[in-house]
Image: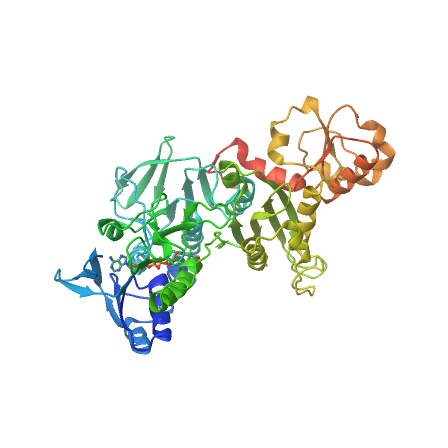
Length: 560
Ligand code: FAD
């Protein structure tokens, strides 16, 4: 059996090694157009920033070591240019331009994705880079090492854009981020992305939200990034990180079906529309386990898993089904960890899926043990059954384990009530007896059970203050530091039972406190004492104040 694999990094190298493990005698040829295989593309930003000091550390295998260990014919700097699915051949081009053909029994496409480069005036100016592979990395690193890079502009505030912002800052540059949307981190909801934005501002990064680049102008060694708003940001380096698209040109030319989102269509065995041709990784689309709709998921974990699974199907025939990925991702943004899984509220809204959400603000481990750090969770779930749809988590410690546990529950069809049932290891340095996940589950469960009706920050923002009573149950000292509506009714929780007569019974009462807990207690008091239209602000003043910081002025170029 002869297996040919196109693409030698995440999906391709994984599949090649697995094929060998299950078939010692198969012939395996791995084509990679670059010089390197199986390298740590997720580590590239950290090498550029100097956090990873040694370039060698990026390479998990060399073509020789990989080829030798797994007895694989690794051909780097060999680009597959044509696939013929009738003849079962591929045409390959060497760097000297010469071409040759190889036949296959089974073919795997793992060609990844390519960066989107918009056709803007000045886009070819020296000093503008995209980051996808080792060659890009070397170009950027060389640029930084051979001149004074004082100002860096990152265009695009996605996960990789933000990692690059941090690393350019680490390398000594003053960093600006230009983002077309009204928030960074597109897979997160506005209110959760706002935490990240505040952190970026605190670190001295300038944020240009809702701003579009119109053109670049080269003035000597300086590139002027000219925005449609008329603003000009001078830069010594520009990193373009506005997105990627699946690499489908080979497949398309071979007549292999491309799906509705632009990725290579595959069935549940990861086989394409052409028999014996399989595809994995960034290049494919696959139905989302919750929505059933195809989507593109550019992440390393699915690419690696698919690579392993597809190898079994290539060797043994179609035996193992892929269940799809819900998009579980995490990024380090300076001191903060930012993670998401499943569907955020904005996506549920787009899809017309009824949902409810909850915000909780906890700490990473027992508050009395030194070093505990804030940790915020937003859940999205079915309002009737509590079935979990998604979660977003921001904090400084323990964000990864929380998001991973929730992701596992979502993938197994779990609900907010399962969050309460999760058993977790606890000692004060690691968690609390009631873990932040359990707290999130209790709060969301109270919402589903109608035990605690909630109102969200956007509803408060858009409501008419004359038609509601906004009740602040924090202490007078806290209130002095800022209120949702200045001068709104303040009755500290511990005085509430004695001052019920101050609350008009004729209007809905929206209660808030610092993070939502005292508001919940207050809502229980009011509901049980006859107030019928009571809601607690989910996430309290913390969620409200952070989210609304970015509602009014989208241009955050000022130092924080
Ligand atoms: P790739 O790993 O990109 O491999 C595709 C390979 O195919 C490339 O080497 C390419 O040269 C080769 N190729 C393409 N066409 C041909 C051809 N015609 N002939 C021969 N070879 C060809 N994901 C995470 O989950 N977490 C992270 O922290 C993270 N960080 C990232 C940071 C950066 C800078 C980048 C670029 C990506 C990051 N990712 C991260 C995404 C992750 O790396 C990808 O999702 C994953 O590598 C996809 O695997 P793949 O096999 O589909 O493609």
